[in-house]
Length: 316
Image (tube, rainbow, N blue to C red):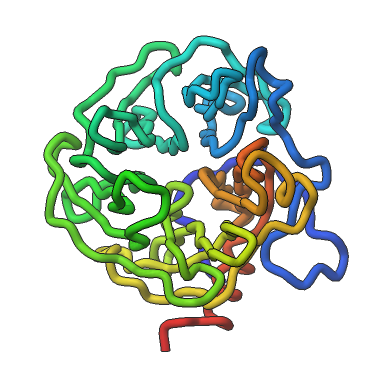
């Protein structure tokens, strides 16, 4: 049995799988958990990240306002399901990720610049005051995701280099740093391979450390005659050299099926940005953006996910 190497989280949001459910990831039956009604003047709230905080949870949320400006705000919850979002904007940009790293909460997000998107990095200790650091890369990049600890003395960041358009460049890379300021020693991680992810892939939640390697959930995008379809995939990366892919499922774990995933501002999207874990039980709760309109919640366990990856392994 695989083990999560991390903290226990006995109050993790959780719902058991429906009886006889055959797939490794299942949806919360009261989805979506966050909608535009959670904040005044919001057009949509999606692609957001949360972490355990004090006795409950804190998060940074992507809000596209009625002006369609893309901004980040903070929110708090006692149970990870019912959220109180603040109307104070902390940063411009979109698609945040959060992780606890060396006693600070680090935020990475897609930061707008006049020359294209970069990966913004900031940290906080209380979700009230934020310290913005230098951007982690030169334009243009998206999907910047920090690892939750140093690996061989270096901080690591997953990114997807791209151009100013929406889809070109579809590969995941990793960058490394000694100080979270100067980044380099870039390594290729993976490209799209199967049809369901054939347009591009991008890292999702903070990688989860296990005794078998780093579990990376990611999004894969298919371009069909009807547009894009975003689905959730998973891979295991080497613990000491995380640019090496050990195992990778050749099929998705979750794809748009429910009305709130199929219909919205951008149809047919499930986009994972956060995963909460409980080491004791192996439970994993994944927050994902649904149709670029709302935030939804899905569940799995470390055993179910890794078993699924290995049974459908792309790496022979």
